[in-house]
Image 1 (tube, helix red, strand yellow):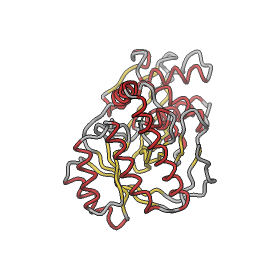
Image 2 (cartoon, protein in one colour; image 1 turned 90 degrees about the horizontal axis):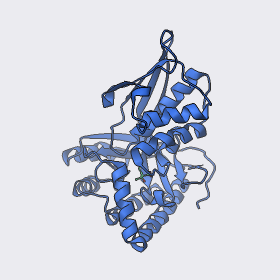
Image 3 (tube, helix red, strand yellow; image 1 turned 90 degrees about the vertical axis):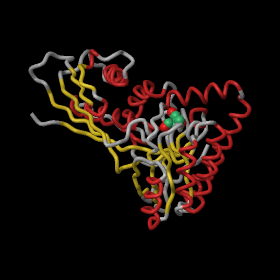
Image 4 (spheres, helix red, strand yellow; image 1 turned 120 degrees about the horizontal axis):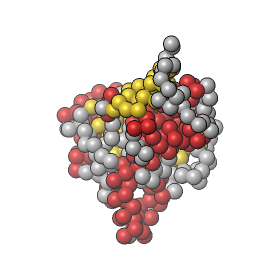
Length: 323
Ligand code: MEV
């Protein structure tokens, strides 16, 4: 019996992490060089509802029904079941693998969810639109993030650069000129849910200070959108450094991340910042392509455990109107 497979890219947040949880805009792009994959085989002899899930990267092999109700995969498949009005699933074996580093700010959880959704929907003969895929993947994001903004599932489901404002329709960003980023994994695993909750507590303690940091971030994101739409790539570097400073004030950077950013700048990067929740995870550096290797080597010799160089291509999306 033939298998069905689907995949989804990783992501990075270019501008606006954390502020996006509080309704400010953020910019994210897919990272095509790393992917999550899901493969499904029917189990014609097994009774219905017998869904076996295997995810070797996280050491999981279990029947769906045996997973805790709040497990990301349980949340995902119960969302699918109710969305498609299914009483039960036909029996199948789903194997998920991924080259996206886990807990590193690259959207591994959302990418696994999107790949699983696409493979499952095709197996069931009910293909989903990107919008439906994103909405359903959001359900499993709640297991990882607690109160996610929805930016990860959105950029990964659409696999396009996005201008994202929580609760508003997504807009796709016209990229006028291509640019190159070096992504460095600090090797420090971080829990997005925990960091989002620390920022929430700090916001509750000092709403004026945190709202002003979020507003500052929103201004940076708007300027970055303008630079992307008009091909002013050199303007992005200083905006990344400014966004990193704001993230430091939010308390989500670490000396190890600051060190990587300084090292990237000394090696010739045009700008750099942490990307994602912080307290570990990854930093991103904007580079001229001819400096990419030197910046990547410097990041590795300053503590990064791996680097990914990715090129964001120009595209012809319609201009988006920032809100
Ligand atoms: C996580 O990739 C980005 C955060 O802004 C959380 C979220 O948007 O859900 C830190």
